Length: 217
Image 1 (tube, rainbow, N blue to C red):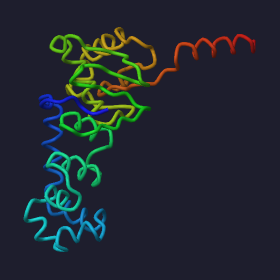
Image 2 (image 1 turned 90 degrees about the vertical axis):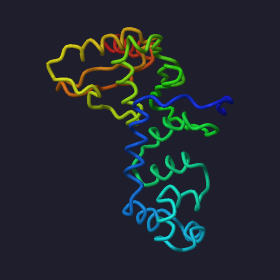
Image 3 (image 1 turned 120 degrees about the vertical axis):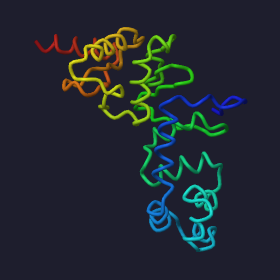
Image 4 (image 1 turned 90 degrees about the horizontal axis):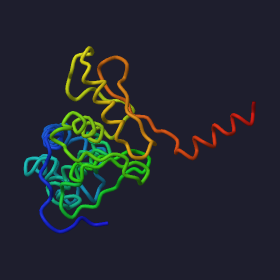
């Protein structure tokens, strides 16, 4: 499905920071050499006139990628960073929602937080919606952090709060209590430093498992 016509949505804070960090990581000579020696093929290098130093001097890694494989500056940033290992596939696709005309590829086995629609989806279902993001800023930041990291099982608390801060536990309670479809759950990590997400079996599967246990008794 293609994006609707019109300007891309404005970058939220998490996306702005991720773009800045990613640009800094790839626009240097070390990344350029890795791209040239380990990722580019002969045809890619030929399109850069077979001259690494000149290609890098005239646009950095982003310019090299555009010369070799085309695309806009935004496309080159995302694709080169992913190829170099600085962006996970899901982090790249999360940023891609802000690039007009670009198709997004989402991993169906992981959740997805759509910052523009303010909806969390998982297994093809909308499981959580944040209707008042200003009042739920803590929750939005946590979901955005999971999304930016590519949904690993655990992330650090993006707020950087102390382990004794009780608002961390309340955030998890508020996040979980409005989940529409009980196929995902969020928890504190037990160390006071981060958060976890867990996949839960569908309700019907849960009932079937309980029934099977009863039959075995």
